[in-house]
Length: 311
Length: 311
Picture (tube, chains in turn purple, yellow):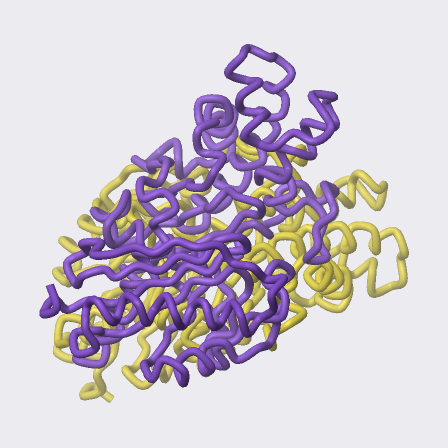
């Protein structure tokens, strides 16, 4: 394999650090998973990343490495290569992560928002392979978004596009750390499900997974939680469909197994709120790459850069 | 002038039919305005368009005509070249307007949504000349939207993108003809201003212009109307800014003179609801081409097509 052109995708999450070597034609050659221990400090996390990339490069060779793409949560300032206003990644706010890694790895590094990377991954090797335009919503602790337009990530002018978790779905809704009220992610994320479970007296410290398990056991109170979540998603998706008229809207994240519970109210809202949806063959579907989407997408970025600089 | 390369832009509105000959470098060579009388029937309106284009072509020559672009209100199915689900243009729903005009004029015709055309016009010769990405909201009887991404209109897969008047700003808000509740255009258009004027007992049949005049005369009840309108706009704009992270958002339309009344509450909502706005140099400004934007944009489309087919 040492002669296969490949790149390395890294997914830096709040609790996981993962890295993968992926070939130009989309084969996952190797994958490394670990835990991100932010309590040990930023230098330790950076060190972990450098070591993970180093291991993959030792196996697959320096010569054929197209580059390194890194997906991170939060607002990215693309020009400066920094994460802006992150709450989850302790010590990384405004830190020049791209240049630091690039220097230590002696290889160009591309920094990308994790949901953008996941959207690009789904476009490359997942549920979006047959379209040029799609929107991805990642339903996790928060809600991330990635917009693929004409085959590429829509970045906006500093790289902050696609913050779909902060669309206002209920103007007087739940308070959000971003300063807003009624952000989508305060009504439809795993965290929102957990908060609602408490409000409807399902239990005080249930995880979203446990709320799902209760639903599977026939607990009808869970319906209200998934109904609210689905409707909030539907409001956001109807607006996205009316804005973009893209053929495909994907949902991913740990909440996806609850699809059968939240999808019907979600779909009802979309139908009611989007003339475009009712009059076109718009698809709203689960993503297919799971938590590997971000690795695929991050690894794709260096290849894309090669294409662009060659054309 | 007969040797100047030019194209013809047509703007078909509910009450006005306008056409202009515009040179490749953006000079308006000639402009014809008339009234659209839909009561006389579709054939009469089509006949008016053919005659208007014919007059301009007789002056500026067949040889240098790059093509004809037509902006029309409503959802456009680009592939089929038809208007879908229009309420304002009697007899035009599903009618093959593009092919009919193209045949009668013996020239390729490009059909475009009027707000998309206006956005392209502002990009070409107006307030958006210095950017590649912008969003335009046209505040009139309804609210239209146009999205310019990487210099070009974002169409979506059938051409219905940019229906920003149908973004949900208040999920339980005013009923809309599109099937939704709380569409932006039911809370921030000229029609919405008129409805609100009635609700706050300013008068039963005031036009938006008359509500503005009352505001100018110091009538404080008008404040509530423009406050509500501004806040609805702000909710939508904050969501658009969070989605696109574009550098520029433009507002146009007959309501623009009331900017000083609705802009402060609009801006307050945007500030509160968009982290991206607060952390970037995002501009929200009046458009500058007025009702000529659509003519410029429609006229630009044939030039763009030439560029694309040459590249």
